[in-house]
Image (tube, rainbow, N blue to C red; front, side, top):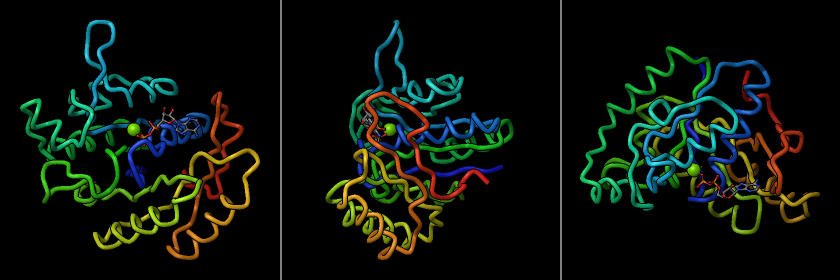
Length: 222
Ligand SMILES: Nc1ncnc2c1ncn2[C@@H]1O[C@H](COP(=O)(O)OP(=O)(O)O)[C@@H](O)[C@H]1O
Ligand SMILES: [Mg+2]
């Protein structure tokens, strides 16, 4: 069984978008894959029920129900620890681990998407996204912006992950111009030089999704 824990340098950096790109590649290779969002805050009301917006994006590529694709669906769009408190829900990391183990029985590849970045409190100040990544024993993928500001955010995220002893499979940079400009090109070079972690993917900003535009610099699915 293969899998990754997908985190990012920030919220809205493109974790879900990049997860969908990875799903597309795995599906094209006929690999049985699922994407899973353990804790989704900011549930949306659609057709008479609450749905998980990130799982709804995964559904553009794979068949997945909210029940399989999410354990905790919370209503307020904020940090999971606060959204859970507002909803009166207790997040139990063991339930998340059990859910992942169950998915690992059925699928050959599991992509787990965190919430926000790696230092986001999941339960409280002593149980963060980084702790969940530790519990799941999945290598990390860090989604980072392609544009200005990304060097600082990415280096900090990598150093924080290393402090938790997490294995980092690679960085996927998202939102490139077409063609890539000089600043973006230098960002890739400097991030690799400073972190010693490979940039394994380049995703352009896409007005219309087209998987031909995705550049994988490493065969991460192997
Ligand atoms: N490469 C891209 N091209 C076009 N739109 C993108 C791209 N990456 C992200 N977006 C858009 O930016 C928003 C935030 O991305 P999302 O993947 O939801 O971030 P995150 O999961 O990190 O919070 C979404 O509306 C998404 O469709
Ligand atoms: Mg997301």
